Amino acid sequence: MDSVDDVVDRLAGIVRSSLDDPSKVFSLIKSMEKHETLSRLVFAIRHPLLYGSKFLGLLYVLMQFLLSALFLVTGLLLVVPSSEEEFQEVMYQFLDLLTKANVSGLRFLAFLVGLALLVMCVNSLANAGEVMQGLGVTEEG
Image (tube, rainbow, N blue to C red; front, side):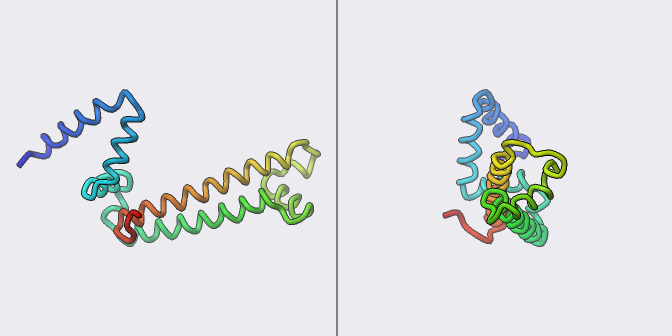
């Protein structure tokens, strides 16, 4: 059986040959994530504190869901306001620019911020899904 140093040296050689091309690194990581045994290694590297503790993993997932819901609600309020008054109220809270001056293009800026928050919502759900898969709660479909 190989020693730990030999395994690390071989892995370093494989990674070193891929470092020049970011697409090779990405494909190497993706193939490691799909491998049944190596996916646990990738999870342990990405989330070292969560790897050994199911409680911390569950807490992390719950916080990601809460953060995702917050991003979703805030993003929807900015992207699709139900009335002009509600839009101005939301803008007062987030930008504090409407209290002093009328800024042109503010609706477009609010739309872009709302879109970014919706993307962050999806990203936090993906993070939660990754942790749930790493903890063995769900399986990759």
